[in-house]
Amino acid sequence: MDILYAIFRVVHIFAGVFWAGTALFFVGYLTPTVEATGQEGMKVMQQLVARTRLIAVTIAAAALSVLSGIFMFLTRSWFALLTAGTATGVTQIQDGGGPPSESQAAELGRLSARGQKWAVYVPYLLVIAVVGMALNEAM
Image 1 (cartoon, one colour):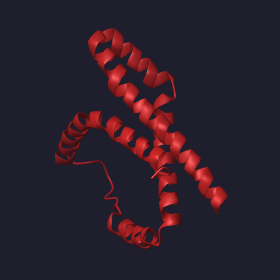
Image 2 (cartoon, rainbow, N blue to C red):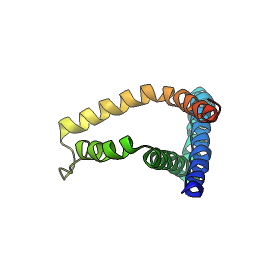
Image 3 (spheres, rainbow, N blue to C red):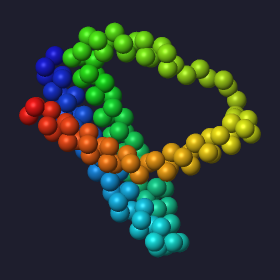
Image 4 (cartoon, one colour):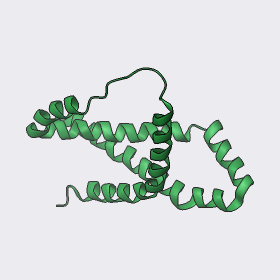
């Protein structure tokens, strides 16, 4: 089990660092540059999104980081093992089927705009997580 745990830890740290670095790059450099250069910046962003796999790879890294972190957490904590099932049951999403109504679509748009406003904080929270991972063994 220690070898498997070590593998998941390496995956967790590398994927997390990639995720954090990409988020910092987007928020700190790419987004301000795209906004400052107008139409030309939008062409760069369209090229990046449409013709590269950066977004897909970043999402995969985020998923790997989260899933490997959950694995490590569950294998080292009986309390986590007991509460994970309860949390999963409580937060299970049921599919209502069909497209959203007009009011639901409006709410989704409002929440999306709100999420974009708060997205600038994600890279900084990821930096805190990376520092915590780095200091984990030292403390």
